[in-house]
Figure 1 (tube, rainbow over the protein chains, first blue to last red):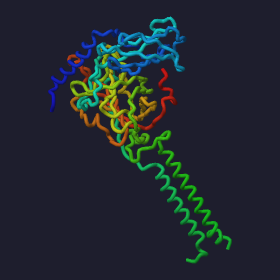
Figure 2 (tube, chains in turn purple, brown):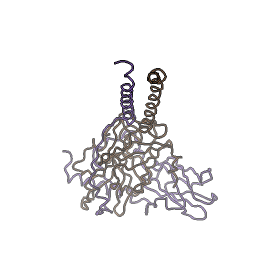
Figure 3 (cartoon, one colour):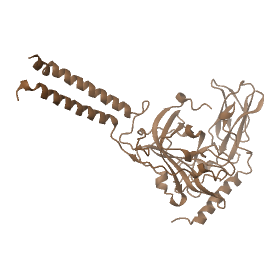
Figure 4 (tube, rainbow over the protein chains, first blue to last red):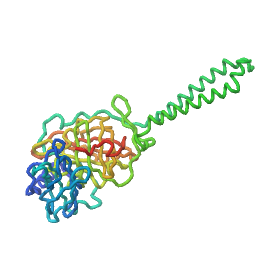
Length: 197
Length: 229
Protein backbone atom coordinates (compact mmCIF):
# COMPACT_ATOMS: atom_id res chain seq x y z
CA UNK A 1 0.00 0.00 0.00
CA UNK A 2 1.49 3.30 -1.01
CA UNK A 3 5.16 3.93 -1.46
CA UNK A 4 7.52 0.96 -1.34
CA UNK A 5 9.81 0.97 1.66
CA UNK A 6 13.17 1.67 -0.06
CA UNK A 7 11.65 4.62 -1.92
CA UNK A 8 10.09 5.93 1.29
CA UNK A 9 13.42 5.96 3.09
CA UNK A 10 15.16 7.48 0.07
CA UNK A 11 12.63 10.32 0.15
CA UNK A 12 13.27 10.76 3.88
CA UNK A 13 17.01 10.94 3.34
CA UNK A 14 16.53 13.33 0.43
CA UNK A 15 14.28 15.52 2.55
CA UNK A 16 16.91 15.66 5.29
CA UNK A 17 19.63 16.52 2.78
CA UNK A 18 17.50 19.21 1.17
CA UNK A 19 16.78 20.75 4.56
CA UNK A 20 20.40 20.93 5.58
CA UNK A 21 21.74 21.87 2.12
CA UNK A 22 19.15 24.58 1.54
CA UNK A 23 20.16 26.49 4.64
CA UNK A 24 23.83 25.60 4.59
CA UNK A 25 24.72 29.00 3.17
CA UNK A 26 23.00 30.87 5.95
CA UNK A 27 24.85 32.46 8.80
CA UNK A 28 24.11 30.02 11.61
CA UNK A 29 27.15 28.62 13.33
CA UNK A 30 25.51 27.01 16.34
CA UNK A 31 21.98 27.53 17.58
CA UNK A 32 21.90 29.63 20.74
CA UNK A 33 21.63 27.72 24.00
CA UNK A 34 18.18 27.73 25.60
CA UNK A 35 18.20 31.09 27.27
CA UNK A 36 17.15 29.94 30.71
CA UNK A 37 20.83 29.64 31.62
CA UNK A 38 21.65 33.14 30.40
CA UNK A 39 21.55 36.21 32.53
CA UNK A 40 19.82 38.09 29.69
CA UNK A 41 16.62 36.64 28.24
CA UNK A 42 15.67 37.60 24.68
CA UNK A 43 12.28 36.94 23.06
CA UNK A 44 11.43 37.75 19.44
CA UNK A 45 7.82 37.74 18.27
CA UNK A 46 6.88 36.13 15.99
CA UNK A 47 9.53 33.43 16.20
CA UNK A 48 8.78 32.48 12.60
CA UNK A 49 8.30 35.66 10.52
CA UNK A 50 8.20 36.04 6.74
CA UNK A 51 10.54 38.36 4.82
CA UNK A 52 9.23 41.91 5.26
CA UNK A 53 7.33 41.14 8.49
CA UNK A 54 7.56 43.35 11.56
CA UNK A 55 8.94 41.78 14.71
CA UNK A 56 9.04 42.74 18.37
CA UNK A 57 12.05 42.17 20.59
CA UNK A 58 11.67 41.89 24.37
CA UNK A 59 14.65 41.62 26.67
CA UNK A 60 14.90 40.97 30.39
CA UNK A 61 18.07 41.09 32.43
CA UNK A 62 20.02 44.03 31.06
CA UNK A 63 21.06 46.35 33.85
CA UNK A 64 20.86 49.49 31.73
CA UNK A 65 18.84 50.43 28.66
CA UNK A 66 21.45 52.89 27.43
CA UNK A 67 22.75 51.95 24.02
CA UNK A 68 20.92 48.61 24.19
CA UNK A 69 20.26 47.22 20.72
CA UNK A 70 19.17 44.02 19.01
CA UNK A 71 20.80 43.03 15.75
CA UNK A 72 20.50 40.23 13.25
CA UNK A 73 21.46 39.50 9.68
CA UNK A 74 17.73 39.02 9.09
CA UNK A 75 16.83 42.52 10.25
CA UNK A 76 16.59 45.51 7.94
CA UNK A 77 18.44 47.55 10.53
CA UNK A 78 19.68 47.42 14.08
CA UNK A 79 16.81 47.66 16.58
CA UNK A 80 17.20 50.19 19.40
CA UNK A 81 15.77 48.99 22.70
CA UNK A 82 14.04 51.11 25.33
CA UNK A 83 12.33 50.60 28.67
CA UNK A 84 8.70 49.47 28.62
CA UNK A 85 8.13 48.81 32.30
CA UNK A 86 8.80 45.07 32.08
CA UNK A 87 12.29 45.23 30.63
CA UNK A 88 13.54 46.35 27.24
CA UNK A 89 11.46 46.52 24.08
CA UNK A 90 12.05 47.32 20.43
CA UNK A 91 10.39 46.90 17.04
CA UNK A 92 12.19 45.79 13.95
CA UNK A 93 11.55 44.40 10.49
CA UNK A 94 12.74 41.35 8.65
CA UNK A 95 14.50 42.18 5.39
CA UNK A 96 12.33 41.51 2.31
CA UNK A 97 15.22 39.92 0.49
CA UNK A 98 16.51 37.60 3.21
CA UNK A 99 16.55 33.90 2.35
CA UNK A 100 14.42 31.57 4.51
CA UNK A 101 16.44 30.06 7.31
CA UNK A 102 17.41 30.31 10.96
CA UNK A 103 19.12 33.55 12.02
CA UNK A 104 20.49 34.48 15.43
CA UNK A 105 19.30 37.70 17.05
CA UNK A 106 21.92 39.16 19.38
CA UNK A 107 21.31 41.79 22.02
CA UNK A 108 24.05 44.11 23.17
CA UNK A 109 23.69 45.96 26.44
CA UNK A 110 25.75 46.85 29.49
CA UNK A 111 28.79 47.17 27.28
CA UNK A 112 28.55 43.55 26.14
CA UNK A 113 28.06 43.06 22.38
CA UNK A 114 26.35 39.68 22.88
CA UNK A 115 24.71 39.89 26.29
CA UNK A 116 21.91 37.60 25.17
CA UNK A 117 20.54 36.02 22.04
CA UNK A 118 17.58 34.34 20.45
CA UNK A 119 16.84 33.28 16.88
CA UNK A 120 14.21 33.71 14.23
CA UNK A 121 13.09 31.08 11.75
CA UNK A 122 12.36 33.02 8.57
CA UNK A 123 9.92 31.17 6.33
CA UNK A 124 9.01 31.84 2.72
CA UNK A 125 5.75 33.62 1.91
CA UNK A 126 4.05 30.49 0.58
CA UNK A 127 4.58 28.72 3.91
CA UNK A 128 1.70 30.49 5.61
CA UNK A 129 -1.02 29.58 3.13
CA UNK A 130 -4.28 28.96 4.89
CA UNK A 131 -4.81 25.29 4.16
CA UNK A 132 -1.82 22.97 4.15
CA UNK A 133 -2.60 19.37 3.12
CA UNK A 134 -3.70 16.93 5.80
CA UNK A 135 -0.91 14.85 7.31
CA UNK A 136 -0.99 11.21 6.19
CA UNK A 137 2.40 9.80 7.14
CA UNK A 138 4.87 9.52 10.05
CA UNK A 139 7.05 12.48 10.92
CA UNK A 140 10.73 12.80 10.10
CA UNK A 141 12.10 14.32 13.24
CA UNK A 142 15.56 12.98 14.03
CA UNK A 143 19.06 13.17 12.60
CA UNK A 144 20.47 10.21 14.53
CA UNK A 145 23.02 12.12 16.58
CA UNK A 146 21.73 10.73 19.87
CA UNK A 147 20.67 7.32 18.55
CA UNK A 148 21.61 4.19 20.41
CA UNK A 149 20.44 5.55 23.75
CA UNK A 150 17.74 3.67 25.60
CA UNK A 151 15.60 6.76 26.01
CA UNK A 152 15.27 7.45 22.30
CA UNK A 153 14.01 3.92 21.57
CA UNK A 154 11.03 4.60 23.77
CA UNK A 155 9.48 2.61 26.60
CA UNK A 156 7.11 -0.30 26.06
CA UNK A 157 3.73 1.31 25.51
CA UNK A 158 2.01 1.25 28.89
CA UNK A 159 -1.42 -0.31 29.04
CA UNK A 160 -3.93 2.46 29.13
CA UNK A 161 -7.63 2.53 28.60
CA UNK A 162 -10.18 5.28 28.58
CA UNK A 163 -13.66 4.97 29.90
CA UNK A 164 -16.57 7.14 30.85
CA UNK A 165 -17.42 7.15 34.54
CA UNK A 166 -20.56 8.40 36.25
CA UNK A 167 -19.71 11.71 37.90
CA UNK A 168 -18.64 11.28 41.49
CA UNK A 169 -21.29 13.69 42.69
CA UNK A 170 -24.10 11.58 41.25
CA UNK A 171 -22.71 8.55 43.04
CA UNK A 172 -22.60 10.43 46.34
CA UNK A 173 -26.14 11.66 45.84
CA UNK A 174 -27.43 8.18 45.11
CA UNK A 175 -25.62 6.82 48.16
CA UNK A 176 -27.05 9.60 50.32
CA UNK A 177 -30.58 8.90 49.08
CA UNK A 178 -30.27 5.18 49.75
CA UNK A 179 -28.85 5.79 53.22
CA UNK A 180 -31.59 8.29 53.95
CA UNK A 181 -34.32 5.92 52.78
CA UNK A 182 -32.90 3.08 54.90
CA UNK A 183 -32.79 5.24 58.04
CA UNK A 184 -36.32 6.57 57.47
CA UNK A 185 -37.63 3.03 56.97
CA UNK A 186 -35.92 1.86 60.17
CA UNK A 187 -37.31 4.78 62.19
CA UNK A 188 -40.85 4.23 60.89
CA UNK A 189 -40.73 0.57 61.90
CA UNK A 190 -39.54 1.43 65.42
CA UNK A 191 -42.09 4.18 66.15
CA UNK A 192 -44.93 2.70 64.09
CA UNK A 193 -46.39 0.34 66.64
CA UNK A 194 -48.64 3.06 68.10
CA UNK A 195 -49.94 4.16 64.67
CA UNK A 196 -51.65 0.81 64.30
CA UNK A 197 -50.58 -1.92 61.94
CA UNK B 1 -47.85 10.21 73.65
CA UNK B 2 -44.59 12.12 73.63
CA UNK B 3 -42.99 9.45 71.50
CA UNK B 4 -45.81 9.65 68.96
CA UNK B 5 -45.57 13.42 68.78
CA UNK B 6 -41.88 13.15 68.00
CA UNK B 7 -42.47 10.83 65.08
CA UNK B 8 -45.10 13.13 63.52
CA UNK B 9 -45.37 16.83 62.78
CA UNK B 10 -42.29 18.79 63.88
CA UNK B 11 -40.18 15.68 64.24
CA UNK B 12 -40.81 14.52 60.71
CA UNK B 13 -40.28 18.01 59.31
CA UNK B 14 -36.94 18.25 61.08
CA UNK B 15 -36.01 14.87 59.68
CA UNK B 16 -36.90 15.88 56.12
CA UNK B 17 -35.04 19.16 56.44
CA UNK B 18 -31.97 17.46 57.82
CA UNK B 19 -31.88 14.94 54.99
CA UNK B 20 -32.44 17.67 52.38
CA UNK B 21 -29.54 19.66 53.73
CA UNK B 22 -27.34 16.57 53.87
CA UNK B 23 -28.17 15.55 50.31
CA UNK B 24 -27.66 19.08 49.02
CA UNK B 25 -24.28 19.22 50.70
CA UNK B 26 -23.31 15.91 49.17
CA UNK B 27 -24.41 17.09 45.74
CA UNK B 28 -22.43 20.32 45.95
CA UNK B 29 -19.37 18.48 47.22
CA UNK B 30 -19.62 15.92 44.44
CA UNK B 31 -20.03 18.66 41.85
CA UNK B 32 -16.98 20.40 43.20
CA UNK B 33 -14.90 17.22 43.04
CA UNK B 34 -15.70 16.66 39.39
CA UNK B 35 -15.45 20.31 38.37
CA UNK B 36 -12.63 21.87 36.39
CA UNK B 37 -10.29 24.57 37.61
CA UNK B 38 -11.16 28.23 37.51
CA UNK B 39 -14.31 29.20 35.68
CA UNK B 40 -13.99 26.58 32.94
CA UNK B 41 -16.39 23.65 32.97
CA UNK B 42 -15.94 19.92 32.71
CA UNK B 43 -16.94 18.35 29.42
CA UNK B 44 -20.06 16.31 30.17
CA UNK B 45 -19.51 12.57 29.47
CA UNK B 46 -16.01 13.28 28.13
CA UNK B 47 -13.65 10.32 28.05
CA UNK B 48 -11.26 10.15 31.01
CA UNK B 49 -7.84 8.60 30.72
CA UNK B 50 -6.94 5.75 33.02
CA UNK B 51 -3.71 4.52 34.56
CA UNK B 52 -2.70 0.88 34.25
CA UNK B 53 -3.59 0.30 37.91
CA UNK B 54 -7.14 1.43 37.27
CA UNK B 55 -6.94 4.90 38.75
CA UNK B 56 -8.76 7.49 36.64
CA UNK B 57 -7.05 10.57 35.30
CA UNK B 58 -8.73 14.00 35.69
CA UNK B 59 -11.89 14.67 33.66
CA UNK B 60 -11.56 16.58 30.39
CA UNK B 61 -12.55 20.25 30.28
CA UNK B 62 -14.71 21.81 27.62
CA UNK B 63 -12.54 22.99 24.71
CA UNK B 64 -11.48 26.63 24.64
CA UNK B 65 -12.97 29.01 22.09
CA UNK B 66 -11.34 31.83 20.16
CA UNK B 67 -8.57 31.78 17.61
CA UNK B 68 -5.46 31.87 19.78
CA UNK B 69 -2.36 30.20 18.37
CA UNK B 70 0.23 28.32 20.46
CA UNK B 71 3.39 30.19 21.44
CA UNK B 72 5.23 27.95 23.90
CA UNK B 73 5.10 24.41 25.24
CA UNK B 74 6.30 23.51 28.73
CA UNK B 75 6.77 20.00 30.10
CA UNK B 76 8.20 20.34 33.60
CA UNK B 77 8.72 16.60 34.12
CA UNK B 78 11.23 16.36 31.25
CA UNK B 79 12.59 19.90 31.33
CA UNK B 80 11.05 21.12 28.06
CA UNK B 81 10.44 24.84 27.59
CA UNK B 82 10.22 25.58 23.89
CA UNK B 83 8.90 28.13 21.44
CA UNK B 84 6.32 26.88 18.95
CA UNK B 85 6.17 27.86 15.29
CA UNK B 86 3.44 26.99 12.75
CA UNK B 87 4.32 24.22 10.29
CA UNK B 88 2.78 22.38 7.39
CA UNK B 89 3.33 18.97 5.91
CA UNK B 90 6.56 17.68 4.35
CA UNK B 91 6.95 16.05 0.94
CA UNK B 92 6.16 12.60 2.36
CA UNK B 93 2.98 13.70 4.11
CA UNK B 94 4.19 13.87 7.69
CA UNK B 95 3.85 17.00 9.82
CA UNK B 96 7.05 18.96 9.24
CA UNK B 97 9.16 19.81 12.27
CA UNK B 98 11.16 23.06 12.48
CA UNK B 99 14.52 23.15 10.68
CA UNK B 100 17.41 21.19 12.23
CA UNK B 101 19.19 24.53 12.68
CA UNK B 102 16.60 25.43 15.34
CA UNK B 103 16.47 22.11 17.24
CA UNK B 104 15.14 23.69 20.43
CA UNK B 105 11.85 24.77 18.80
CA UNK B 106 8.66 22.73 18.41
CA UNK B 107 6.32 22.87 15.42
CA UNK B 108 2.50 23.05 15.41
CA UNK B 109 0.50 21.74 12.46
CA UNK B 110 -1.24 24.97 11.43
CA UNK B 111 -3.90 23.19 9.37
CA UNK B 112 -5.39 21.62 12.49
CA UNK B 113 -6.85 22.89 15.75
CA UNK B 114 -4.82 25.05 18.09
CA UNK B 115 -3.91 23.37 21.41
CA UNK B 116 -6.93 23.90 23.67
CA UNK B 117 -9.48 23.94 20.85
CA UNK B 118 -11.73 21.02 20.01
CA UNK B 119 -9.99 18.19 18.19
CA UNK B 120 -6.45 16.87 18.09
CA UNK B 121 -3.75 19.58 18.01
CA UNK B 122 -0.41 18.30 16.70
CA UNK B 123 3.04 19.30 17.99
CA UNK B 124 6.17 17.90 16.37
CA UNK B 125 9.78 18.25 17.46
CA UNK B 126 13.12 16.67 16.71
CA UNK B 127 14.46 13.96 18.99
CA UNK B 128 17.97 14.80 17.87
CA UNK B 129 20.00 16.43 15.12
CA UNK B 130 22.90 14.77 13.34
CA UNK B 131 25.11 15.51 16.32
CA UNK B 132 23.10 16.41 19.42
CA UNK B 133 19.92 15.89 21.40
CA UNK B 134 16.99 18.13 20.44
CA UNK B 135 13.82 19.53 21.97
CA UNK B 136 11.84 16.26 22.25
CA UNK B 137 14.76 14.02 23.17
CA UNK B 138 13.12 12.95 26.45
CA UNK B 139 9.57 12.75 25.14
CA UNK B 140 9.50 8.95 25.27
CA UNK B 141 10.09 8.97 29.03
CA UNK B 142 6.73 10.64 29.64
CA UNK B 143 4.05 8.55 31.30
CA UNK B 144 0.26 8.62 31.57
CA UNK B 145 -0.65 11.17 34.22
CA UNK B 146 2.11 13.56 33.17
CA UNK B 147 1.26 17.14 32.25
CA UNK B 148 1.96 19.40 29.28
CA UNK B 149 1.18 23.13 29.28
CA UNK B 150 0.81 25.28 26.19
CA UNK B 151 0.95 29.08 26.39
CA UNK B 152 -1.36 30.66 23.82
CA UNK B 153 -1.29 33.96 21.97
CA UNK B 154 -4.30 35.36 23.89
CA UNK B 155 -2.53 35.08 27.24
CA UNK B 156 -4.26 31.85 28.25
CA UNK B 157 -2.60 28.58 29.17
CA UNK B 158 -3.94 25.13 28.39
CA UNK B 159 -2.75 22.17 30.47
CA UNK B 160 -3.13 18.65 29.17
CA UNK B 161 -2.89 15.31 30.99
CA UNK B 162 -1.10 12.49 29.19
CA UNK B 163 -3.22 9.36 28.67
CA UNK B 164 -0.95 7.31 26.41
CA UNK B 165 2.67 7.09 25.25
CA UNK B 166 3.24 4.90 22.21
CA UNK B 167 6.09 3.91 19.92
CA UNK B 168 4.65 3.28 16.47
CA UNK B 169 6.69 1.64 13.75
CA UNK B 170 6.58 3.41 10.40
CA UNK B 171 5.11 0.31 8.80
CA UNK B 172 2.26 0.23 11.33
CA UNK B 173 1.54 3.96 11.23
CA UNK B 174 -2.20 4.72 11.01
CA UNK B 175 -2.59 8.46 10.36
CA UNK B 176 -6.23 8.50 11.47
CA UNK B 177 -5.34 6.97 14.82
CA UNK B 178 -2.31 9.20 15.38
CA UNK B 179 -3.51 12.49 13.90
CA UNK B 180 -7.24 12.09 14.62
CA UNK B 181 -9.00 12.69 17.93
CA UNK B 182 -9.81 9.76 20.23
CA UNK B 183 -12.90 11.60 21.52
CA UNK B 184 -13.86 14.30 19.03
CA UNK B 185 -15.57 16.49 21.66
CA UNK B 186 -12.39 16.91 23.69
CA UNK B 187 -9.49 19.28 23.23
CA UNK B 188 -6.64 16.84 22.60
CA UNK B 189 -2.90 17.14 22.05
CA UNK B 190 -0.36 14.94 20.31
CA UNK B 191 3.38 15.38 20.80
CA UNK B 192 5.29 13.49 18.15
CA UNK B 193 8.95 12.82 17.54
CA UNK B 194 11.12 10.07 16.12
CA UNK B 195 12.01 6.91 17.98
CA UNK B 196 12.81 3.25 17.56
CA UNK B 197 16.18 2.56 15.97
CA UNK B 198 18.14 4.81 13.64
CA UNK B 199 19.20 3.47 10.26
CA UNK B 200 22.37 5.38 9.30
CA UNK B 201 22.19 4.27 5.66
CA UNK B 202 18.71 5.63 5.26
CA UNK B 203 19.32 8.42 7.78
CA UNK B 204 15.96 7.78 9.31
CA UNK B 205 14.45 6.48 12.52
CA UNK B 206 12.24 3.39 12.36
CA UNK B 207 9.34 4.69 14.46
CA UNK B 208 7.45 7.64 15.83
CA UNK B 209 6.98 8.32 19.54
CA UNK B 210 3.43 9.62 20.03
CA UNK B 211 2.27 11.14 23.32
CA UNK B 212 -1.51 11.59 23.55
CA UNK B 213 -3.06 14.01 26.04
CA UNK B 214 -6.31 15.89 26.67
CA UNK B 215 -7.24 19.26 28.22
CA UNK B 216 -7.66 19.14 32.00
CA UNK B 217 -6.86 22.67 33.21
CA UNK B 218 -6.74 26.22 31.92
CA UNK B 219 -5.22 29.38 33.28
CA UNK B 220 -3.70 32.75 32.67
CA UNK B 221 -0.09 33.18 31.68
CA UNK B 222 0.29 35.88 34.33
CA UNK B 223 -0.68 33.52 37.16
CA UNK B 224 1.98 30.94 36.57
CA UNK B 225 4.59 33.40 35.37
CA UNK B 226 5.59 30.68 32.94
CA UNK B 227 6.61 33.29 30.41
CA UNK B 228 9.50 34.32 32.63
CA UNK B 229 12.83 32.79 31.70
